[in-house]
Image (cartoon, rainbow, N blue to C red; front, side, top):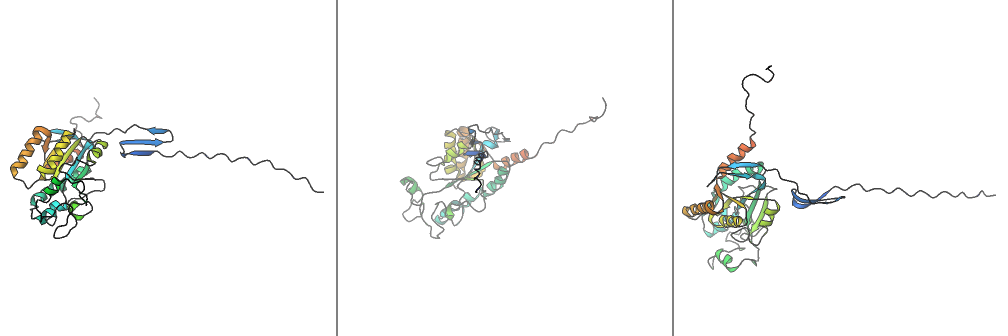
Amino acid sequence: MKSPRRTLPPAAAPAPVRAASAPGVGFGPVAHNAWQLTDAGVNLLRAPLAPKAVQLDAQPQCITLDIVRSVLVVVDMQNDFCHPKGWFGQKGIGVKPMRKPIPAIAALLPAWRAAGGTVLWLNWGVRADRLNLPPVVQFNGRRSAHAVGYAETSPEDRGRSLVPGEWGAQVVDELAVAPADITVFKHRLSGFWDNELDSILRLRGATTLLFAGVNTDRCVFSTLQDAGFLGYDCVLLQDACSTPSPAYVSRAIHFIVQKLHGFTASSADLITALAALATPSKPPTRRGRSSTTPR
């Protein structure tokens, strides 16, 4: 006789596994301007930026700027302008004036980065098909039916002139581009036209722009003017800029900047100011009785 089959009780359903709380995800161009998404929702609060003030001898007045909200804008220090075998050099244009700022900029870059400053390379960079270059820009880049224009190759072929990715559009070897630096390409004298420069600066919270590079009276000044019109504080670093134009042209630019658009200063003075910022001040030595002496 078979024993009756025992019916086993139904197995208990496994306890639901609770998912671990996912870490927050940030959405934004920089840490201090980002949303944070967590299981609890979206946090729209931005982290405040602690200022880092440095005092700089400038004209027409001494200024104090916040390194955290300042950007060093280096304009057009590229092979096609500054290298003897670049686009300008092969046109027969002497590149000595364009190379003049190299030592000053090379000395400033490490000091500025060490202080926590942002470096932005504002470079010419044209489309290979030149579809967004109007006739006046193309004409000014050539000036002769037999000359080499934008996005064309010079007799000693080093690639198409000022096309991003080509040798001529690269920053000269003497100036190191760090991984954290920003590069923005332009295709007008002013860096604020038809590109993303203004958006990048505003999303970073930048308020002060310091200008270096070439040429003082062309791309540097055009960009500085537009920066002032847009509400940025502008500082022209005189010894870190140059131009092949006569000296009186630079003097006029300096006068106009001081009169209407902001301030002029020197990179040497800025380096000195940054060095003082990096050196902690010693507490004053107390003279007389020690603090342990009974009073």
